[in-house]
Structure formats: structure tokens, C-alpha cells
Image (tube, rainbow, N blue to C red; front, side, top):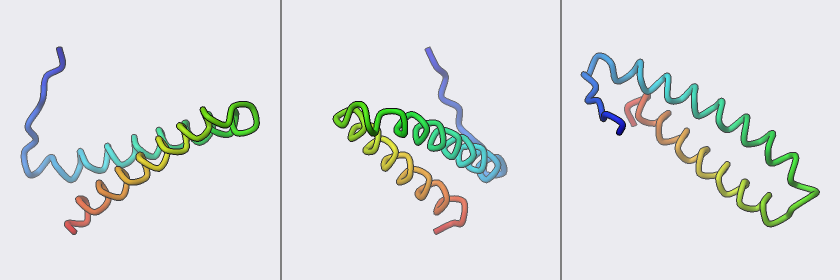
Length: 69
């Protein structure tokens, strides 16, 4: 079972930056996977595109939190 950790205010910007970096890596990996399926399996490519869009939305939300918006 995973523990949920409460971050102190000093840790939050550093941790948000780490989350932003990890989301970017995931988006890059997902984009590569999407490229493999674009011509082979349209339904799967559509689902992966939706997932990529969701990661992009998450990245924007984290970026807003980092900037304090």
C-alpha cells in the first residue's frame, strides 16, 4: 500500500518541478507509442491521443501551480 506524504511549503515548489519533469518524460514516451500505432490501429491511436491530451492538461495545471496562478 502506498503512503501519501504531506509536503511542507518549502518542498512544494521543488516537488512540483519534479512532477513537471516526470510528466514531460511521460508525454514524450506516450508520443513515441502513439507514433507506432497511428498507421496500424486507429482506435488505439485515438485512445493514446486522449491520454496524451490528458497529460498535457496535467502539465499545464502543474505549471500554473509552480507559477502560483
